[in-house]
Every structure is written in C-alpha cells, then in structure tokens.
Image 1 (cartoon, rainbow, N blue to C red):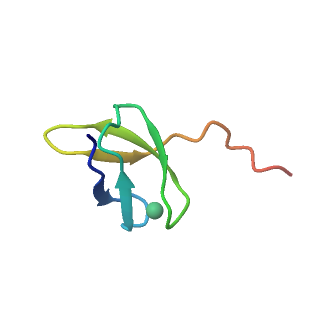
Image 2: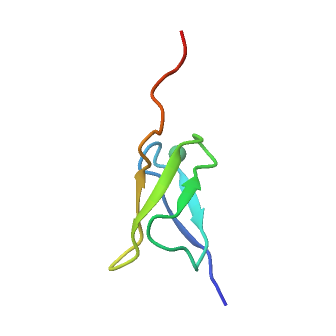
Length: 60
Ligand SMILES: [Zn+2]
C-alpha cells in the first residue's frame, strides 16, 4: 500500500502531497503555485526541486 507524504514545495514553501510510490525523476505539480516539480531523491528524505522548464519562450 502507498501512503501519501506531505513535503514542502521548493518554490512557494506550500504543502505538496506526494504519493507513496513515487520514483526519482517523477514530475509533480504544486497545487499552490502550479510549479512543476521533479522528485530528486527519495532517501534519506524526499526531496523536490523545481523542474527545468522545457521552453523559456513566453511568446512575443
Ligand atoms: Zn508551490
């Protein structure tokens, strides 16, 4: 069974719920700020970083 974990968003410091069966490299969305987050490590503790943006072209 998987137990969700609450961890801190590196962008807005809000709570992010992470499923218990995530894998390194999985992408999540922060429900608070909408940032795309990447799972960087599972141990010794769950660690999230802001995912690199695929495109920095915001249109002009
Ligand atoms: Zn956030």
